[in-house]
Length: 141
Image 1: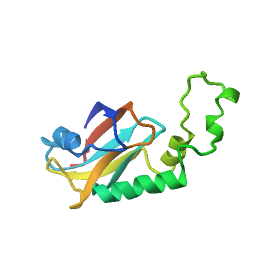
Image 2: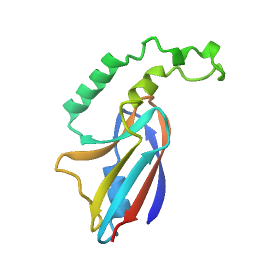
Image 3: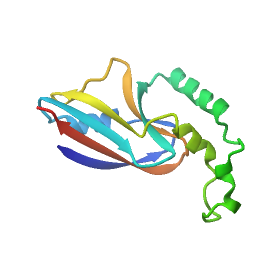
């Protein structure tokens, strides 16, 4: 077993982690599982296809369902016990509720057993941040 933390600067909504994960598990032999976890409440981990128009469809759906300029109680900074400089990001919290903060991926001989079109993404809902992603590999031999 090993654990590695990486820091990702999120300049866009979908950031592929596939290469970083592949580099970390490359030398593992036999069967295993890699867990990818993000320790934040306004982003997520998602295994999905990375086709550009699909990602655009997801972005459009999220904006229609939870628009940035929506009316969220979370954004009522004046009545919350938080600093006045707190981010106005109720939409980010709502979007994250329907995604997961982790993914478990089976591995064999140093390779993730992803489908042909699958990728592992950090999905950012509150852009331009540094995010801590924890990658844990567990051998199941």
